[in-house]
Image (cartoon, one colour):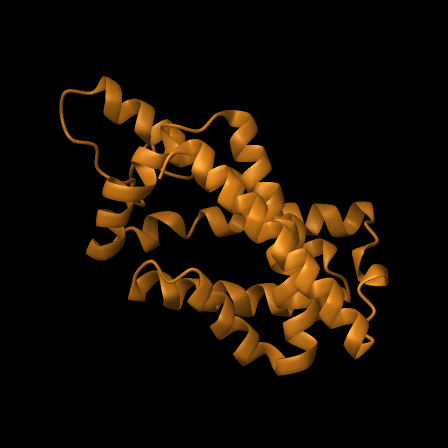
Length: 193
């Protein structure tokens, strides 16, 4: 998929999630607006949680199926996007997915179902489905503990921003290296650390 096609898809899906979330919240009298009030503590907690999620990338990439997705899908795509694209994608996905999954689905269906739905949206492989479902449960816990959507929104956006920048860096190294690029491992000096 081209950069422009992906960005159009991201904007379309994000707008659809906002629309569905708004309509659902209105019909079911779910108070979303009070959950979106930022405070410095919530923003900081979200940024720290998102940064902690970066440490899972090398573990996730131990799975051969994720190594293939990294090498054949994600890294080539990341080579086409700009830093502005990374910021837009991270912000849109963090805001709109958390608005829907934690703002609407969580209070309606609970942690398990909303996390499974989140995992299904990200099911590139079975491994990624399991990982994303676990991340969905963590985001639900953050929402419930903070009584706010700000923490998971910032955590999600922070994670996506860092992961996409890591992919761009790996794509740049692969393009300039004569030998095949391997995904970062826990001991790799090029991994998250």
